[in-house]
Length: 521
Image 1 (cartoon, rainbow, N blue to C red):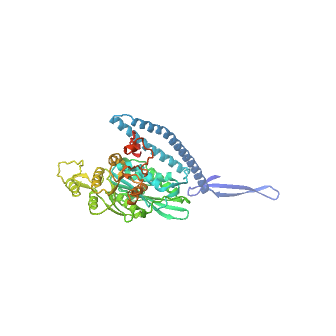
Image 2 (image 1 turned 135 degrees about the vertical axis):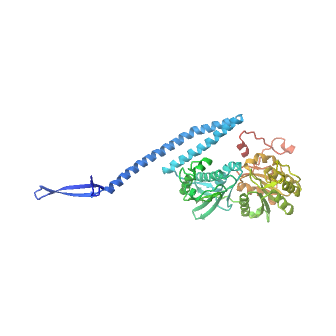
Image 3 (image 1 turned 90 degrees about the horizontal axis):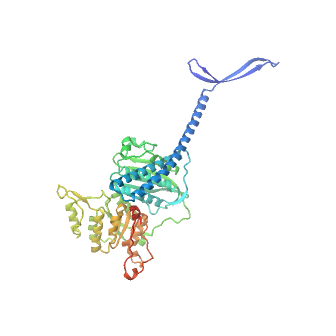
């Protein structure tokens, strides 16, 4: 092999094969030579060698990142654990603030490390989905519960919907599905300042062996421009640098989520408009599970013929989501956006059950001093005491929110006296459960955490149904405080000595420093 140069100075790689030419006596009389242009072949061979080198370097990088991710998580978990112990001690306000900043930063770093680890597995082709039977509704509701505190803390409503009649026991990878949910819901909460984040799950197709679902996450946030949408699913890419500075993040979450969706034989996309919120969607295919009892709910006929329900929720998305559940139970329901509108209807119509959703902080219809007090008087409620502040302006300026927890519970107390046949189900934001517990002694009232799980809502409706209330031995719902798990309160069979003779209800004192665990208990 040797190079030659053409007349136009172009280099050509030549492969020359030569052999001798002999006469009849065997003497060499000449040479026969064949030249072949191997320029293109040489170029391909060099490219292949470079590719092998790049793959080796990439494998080494992936192995290094995977090793470092594991090594970093060990001391980071120790830091987080020790910091939690510090938070459980007596601290000054400044010290507690520093410790909480350490916790927030550690959690962000742990999420980043986990994303990098997933990315290295995907690049190395070593990420495999597991196949286990799981309840799709449980994964959806658990994920929504996990982000609820953050959303409600910002004054955002967070809710979900999956048709109660859908078969939800499927076979697939629940952890990767949960990770996609978390990424999309967390992004929705991060980029939304007011309104709501809503998760909708729809059954797209069913065959004898598989079920295809489409998952949609709506938010009422800042929205994304058309140019920005083109960058969304690239690694380490965000809409623009200002977004990174304002909201943080690495740009890995959506890229990883899209690849997870593709591993589930699905896809991912976005629909958005600047300033008008966003819709992130993805699809996934799961295997159907045969010979298993799918979650079923009591036939609607047992909930009472012609039973009418009044639903009170200021947030339209939450209201529509609950209405769809009630419609699936074949219950007649009427919805209003204010507790005072509900009181007007209760005076004119007979509603055996009222579902009340107190507003989260920063949400709800604003009212004036005059309209607030007049509405209260009109229903015979008197002037409900409320912490209202007046500034230098006149009385008609906005000074409060009508459907907060305190107002709702005070109205329920009055309703208990004037209309004792009405039974209430209060869907209390999970961040306000500690305050709501003060009102759980109200007669004929069930207190459920919000976001509410379908089973908890269904059980509460069954408890309040006139048919079921007449069943002997049923415990009164006024002492039930349902946690995020959706199950009703434990029915204790053990009664302390002397309790039966005294006729007093069993009370339990919980002493625990961690507020989250207290709420769960």
